[in-house]
Length: 173
Image (cartoon, rainbow, N blue to C red; front, side):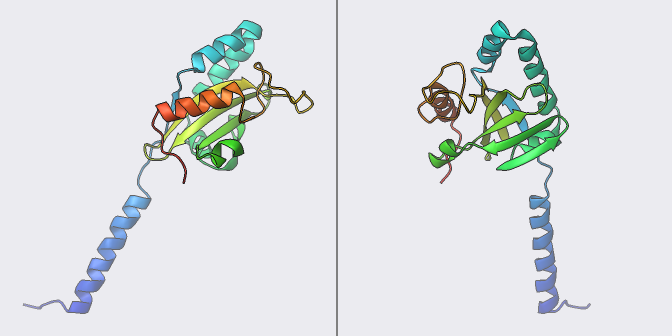
């Protein structure tokens, strides 16, 4: 009976370890998209002024939620996705305070809206926290409850932080 050499055992254990590491890294992760506590209210508010936009936003979120490619794009600091066409970007004032919060800017018909979401990396989950009308860049600096410009003191910012904490999503270091 042939006894394997120490070098052969080390090599075999090393290759087994690499195999397990690669299986972990390349594991089949399915990301999920969930509506937050205020999404229905936000859509109803929009429906009260522009009903077709609320319906399109709802359909847009369904389309994003049904596409793993689209959801994966949401995990980037700054990215664009081709179908449905949107881009994502981290919200600086939220990240500065430790909140892993981003915005989706739908392109085409819904360009005036922003979908604010949080990423829970521990659970591989995205939570839509708000759907807002983007504040126009020429708008006065005062806080307008009907539009959002990512102001840290805006009621939407506070609502997003409160829901993030309520969901117990881990803060950024």
